[in-house]
Length: 478
Image (cartoon, rainbow, N blue to C red; front, side, top):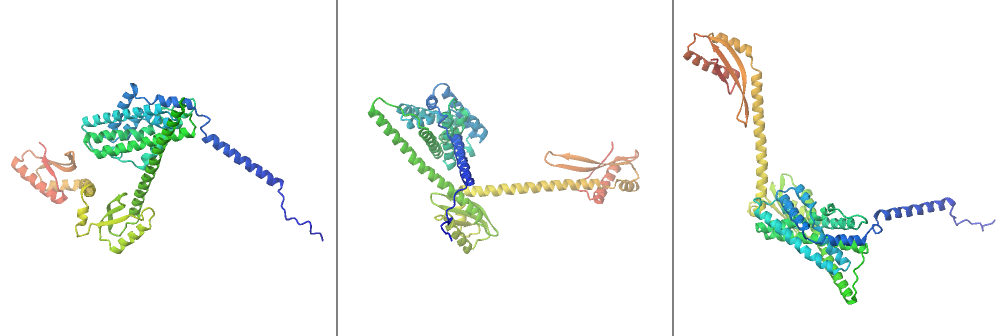
């Protein structure tokens, strides 16, 4: 028996080889498609982009006036809390030029362009803040609006807008054969114009906290826009500026690298901190909405402080037992990102006075305002329902009047009446509308005036009693 023909090795069949070939070709086609879809290097005009960026840096003549007018429009939009007006101002704003110039000049080691960009950036900031300051100083409307308050401190969303807005603008500018439209500056203007206007507002009303917070927001956004430009310029390998003096070239390169590191490291740290704060606030809201629940108890308000890691929850209703509060504390310790957070519960039924002491200032005013508005709405709704029902009841009474029976009875009881009629009179004081039943009688000619008046009073009293009317008007034909 021949055992040498042991077939342990499986040879690849032609079908297997064809499948591998098809799979390899498919993968190569996908890679080629993705490369063509996302690759922007081949269609990038580096020299034209550098010239376009340098051209937009200067703030002189027309550009300065356009900036002033756009700041006025944006300030008006913030003043009346109109997002549409603010967006309209962004469409004509030339704010992005110097900031993009800073990012590009650092990327290509162009010290002269960097100096020019920084000088024009300073001019832009001063001109914008001065324009907004004059508007808010002269404007009779100085009320804090949601649009203004939203620009007094940076959030992670502001940073993301600056990053992706800057990336979108510089990528658009690098496309060969085109010049990025001013529309591409809208995203950047979103991050720059409102904060500068808010700085002017804060100075105009003497609120240093608003002015400082808005300036901080503007600075962060400007840094991230410049950083986006720097990163894209490096990825696309923009040509470095060459200097005849080798020492100067080396020193310039070192300065540019130092500036890039000085900007990138704090920016990354700031981005992480803002992201952590946003996550903390979102987790806090989710915890309070899902965990802080008890029958007969309502969360009136809650506050959170990222720096102190405190969550203050204000309850109203039945007293919550301590074992339930301990259960909430245990769940808080097991909640991701909230492990080190301190939960403090303040209950409306607490007789120690601590609740009253804590519910002060803005919190107390907010609660009272909410309760007042809700109660007023409830009262108004009930008053409207009462008025409606009264009107409907009056209509029903009038519609169900047995006119034939009344006319026969009045003919029997008052033989001096010649004609008897009934009608509805609708009256209004422009606040409420009422329908009044009206009875008109015509007397025979031989009835005296004194007798007519006495009979009319009797008729009115009789009809009110018989028909259960609250109001009734009885008169006679002339």
